[in-house]
Image 1 (cartoon, rainbow, N blue to C red):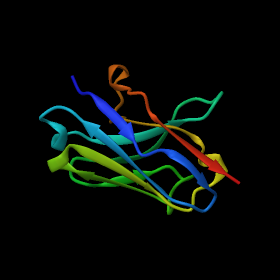
Image 2 (image 1 turned 45 degrees about the vertical axis):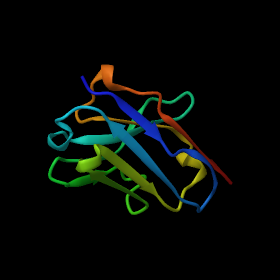
Image 3 (image 1 turned 90 degrees about the horizontal axis):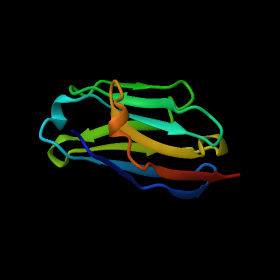
Length: 115
């Protein structure tokens, strides 16, 4: 069982930046692909970015070139650096393994981008 705790969200103006963190429990973190996901009010949860155990990254078209996912295996942490934020990035952001497991969803962290 893996426990995931997201942090780093907040209120930012359009064009600003935030860095999200996801702290994971468990001894096998370095072997697991991790992803960031988000859910806006009234919308389905969507995939944002992912990183393999080897560090290969993938991004949704909507965030490509603006967001960067990274991981620090020694700290059991995955990050999401978000630059050039837009109002449409407003969502609750979650991390999970790839592919996702229902029991691993945490509380998420709210990101609000004002115009």
